[in-house]
Image (cartoon, rainbow, N blue to C red):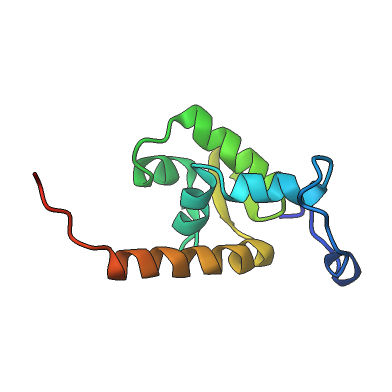
Length: 123
């Protein structure tokens, strides 16, 4: 669980220039808002999940893209990764406190969309 970047309170109050290409916060925003990053964060909101559970639950994601997305979110400090020394190894993922904080508005956004999405007529 110690993997990734965790910001201290002093660092968190630092103003990041996210429009600059060398801003570290920009990479984190890119990972969260990527096609698969959002789905991974929302999937982990209620439960810790194993790799195959995430893969099966997020329709359309390849194992390669899931592995890349999880690796980025772990390095960003939003997701923790725990490996059980079994054969084969069992890897479980969950949200860190930072990941919970970031994913909350994403869940609210998805709830708003699904509550108000107009019905589409076939035609």
